[in-house]
Image (tube, rainbow, N blue to C red; front, side, top):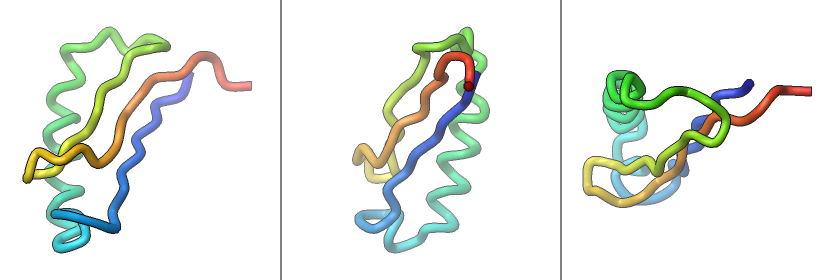
Length: 64
């Protein structure tokens, strides 16, 4: 399996403070993952501190 986290960093809060926003995103989702079974197909949108969608995380099936 693969865990994928993709975040667009060229606009909004991430463009203004990329380090701070990424730290916040990783802390939040790191703590929130306990609510998921972490199986292929699991995933969710990722939001910045202004509640704008900036990416997505997902779990994909077996890597080739």
